[in-house]
Each structure stands twice: as C-alpha cells, then as structure tokens.
Image (tube, rainbow, N blue to C red; front, side, top):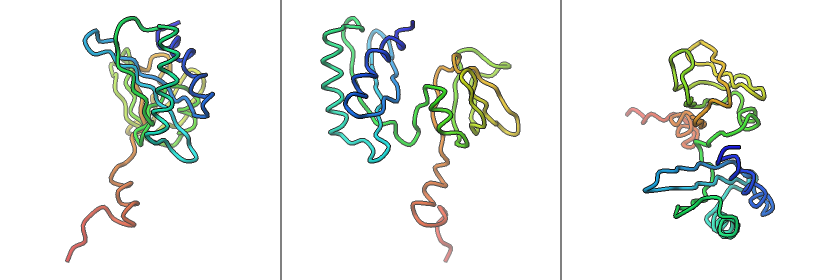
Length: 168
C-alpha cells in the first residue's frame, strides 16, 4: 500500500463523517516544503472557508495522534475548484463527456501528457479522445489528472453570450 493509499484510508472516513465528499489527496514529499493537500466537496452547496477550517481541525487531530507523516509538513484543505482533480475511476466516470488533462507516470506510446474528452471508463482504464484518436490510459499509471474546462465558453456563459467584446 502506497503512502497516499494509507493517507486516503486514514483520512477519508474523517472527512466523510463530517458530511463532506472526500475527493482525494495530493502529497508532496519534497523535504524542504512538504505539503499534504486534501480536497473536499459538498456538491449541493459547495465548499467555503468554514468547511475547510472544520475539516482541517479534525484531520489535524487525527494526524497528530496517528503520525503517518514524520517531521514537519503543511496541511491544506481545499475545494476541488473548477479544474477539479480526478483520482478514481468513479470520479472519471462521473465526468464522462468532459475535457481532462492527464499526466502519466510512464509514457504511453512515447507520450506522457494528454488533454481530451473522457469518453469511456472502466475500473482499470480511462479512454480519452485526443484530436480524433482514442487513448486508453491505465488508471494505475496516472500521476495527475484534472478537469480542463473551456474557460472561454464558461466566461461566455457567465456573461450571457459571446466572450468576444461587442463591435461598435
């Protein structure tokens, strides 16, 4: 079991007992600046600062007792945001049809970075459509994945029309 898997197993129940969705964790083990980032969500109402503070207090208490990370580190609790990280097959499945950026630990056909539409997901594989080619990416080999929404389209939607300024 990897360090991230152990942290997931330890922290997910704490977050879920507080009534939040445990999205996942990112752990940067750089000796000079170690960071444990926990992503939480509440799909009905979103996440605010008070939510992050509450989870941070509870998680800190568990981490102090269990000590899964030796030495000093920074704990951050965050909402997943618009460029939501994707950690599990279920999360990829939930966002089928959306655009995602995926970075692999090892290359797939000499390529490590992909940006495309999530078109299929099973328990071991995510299929992305990238420029008219489907890539089957093993979930176990994913280093990092995030949604990649079209920001121009989102801006246009929020302004009720085109993202382009009106011509006079």
